[in-house]
Image (cartoon, rainbow, N blue to C red; front, top):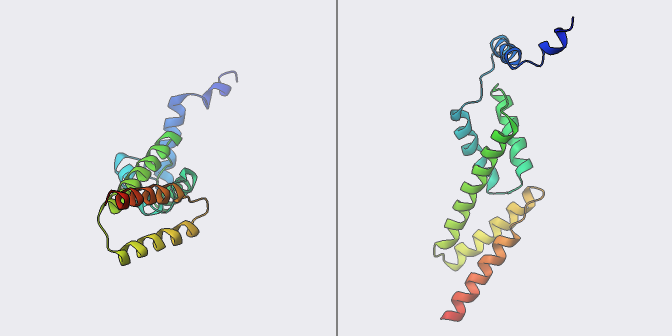
Length: 141
């Protein structure tokens, strides 16, 4: 009986049970392929918000729908951070390109709408930074 308390705490026991559960319930283990897929899936959401909890919840939902075993928390955090980084690159790349007045107004309007779509989204820093850049360009001319 004294060994029974140690039984569930052994790493070997946990791995064996995990493999059995994967076979019985047809789960897949989380791999680097799922990591890349998760990043790609989260980029659109990350372009609307930089809140990690929103992205993490979306990733967990996606993995559950696909019957993939949830990875450790640090792996979820890495997927979300990479998605935020890639989304920020896309956003900043779009602001560096010259735009007509009509396209510029449309872009700012879309950002305004996106900030209202997801709770906790803040594009204020981004818009203030771009406003300063426009003012500096105007003053230089």
